Image (cartoon, rainbow, N blue to C red; front, side, top):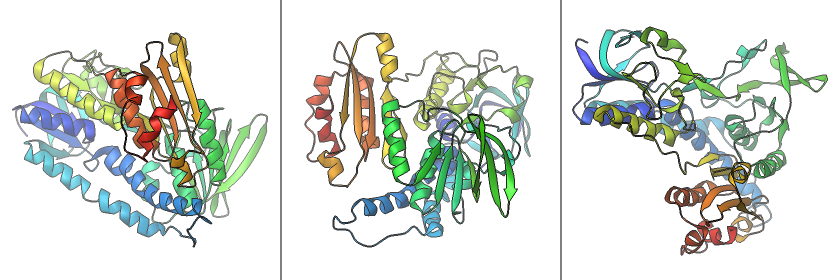
Length: 448
């Protein structure tokens, strides 16, 4: 490749793909490069395949909840068949993504990339490429673990590609990945344990609802051990033995499979950022509020690779990628608006959040907190669900500041509160919505 590109995008996930298409359609010469198949974590190694597998777990759970309520028999998950169901979605993604980019006029490159100068990058198999702008959208990778035997743990990508599901599984860490995988594996018949070094799991979510999720998880057969510091992993007669410390005592647990669920960090190590004078902060590219590198103005970053104010969520990566592209195209300083971005832990049932936590809202001033146990409401009764609650936080002006929900289909319902927060709606305005009945949304008015 000769000449200088207007833009090279490093990382073919949602942030990079959207930015590349936007700039190419505006007339820029654009290339995108990734050493992995095109599509990124969400489509290939995260959100989407996880939810494809969750469909099987949901079916099992739905049948179990309705035992003695009209449903008979004991359904089971055929793991290889469920995996083929997942692959029916993921397998076509890379070619579809790449074809869409080519149709948009973007040159697609494969190989590892690294900066060689402030305005040049080397791409494996393609030599050095000059650029006017570069967008770093390389996503995240599992956080390094430093205890002996840590290499025996598989990561989330490996779990989502398991040909067979082992019987005894230990997940390390108390965040999204561990809880979501635990709920899938437990419904598939595995014995599942979560080991978390912290005293509290899922710290970004409402603690009252997390307590309810933990109770529900244990009812599903998942063991959760908090304040467990792993000392080492040993081999034990064809299995793994995890030795961990809890308080002043050492304990051991055997497992057939160990899964890394202890968080992720920006995937930047391979880029040689120093060669381009790119500074980092909190592990990500140090950026201005408008996503431009603070040390090299040619460079922008978006998604998990950027040390921005956005949460590590796919929708955030998408709109950061689009805003970074707009700022490069127009030489403006538009800042992303992170108001009303929801997040969900796709356990069964799911835990959802948007806006401020109760403690964050109270720190800002007087608020009204409405906590409602919805376990005995019709929406749960018809499904046989035993655990559900909602917490809605409003300010003195009636505007919704935060919503926190745990229950079936609440991942969909949280979007109503997301829109309300985004538009600055009051509780009275939301309650005035005439919802179809009986639906989950028809419950909203009773949650305030």
